[in-house]
Length: 111
Image (cartoon, rainbow, N blue to C red; front, side, top):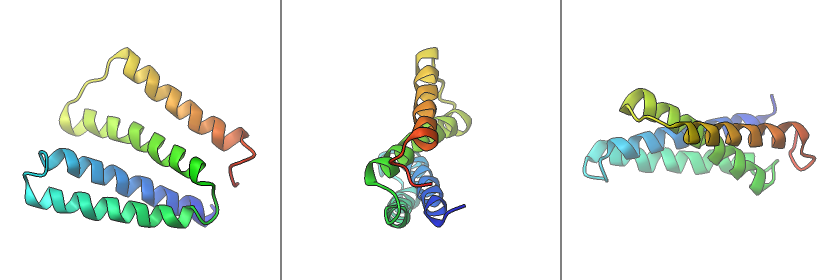
């Protein structure tokens, strides 16, 4: 697997952890989850910068934000008991479909 995809994976992972910590921080009223938000988001942007060396910013951001949305929705369901209706699930499926189309068919994406 190319290194820029590994960096993008870590950027997505740390962004998802940061968003999870954001929920746990209760609007920055809890100290350690608030610290985790800053650290994880900082790491996410740092890792994303390495992916940007080989991939266009629009593609990186689409994959980063799209997969982050899907993962945090899953985490919200599992950890925080947040339910999604059919329209939300359909929207998440469309996001995944869009990411697959970019990855599989776009000539803009670096493979």
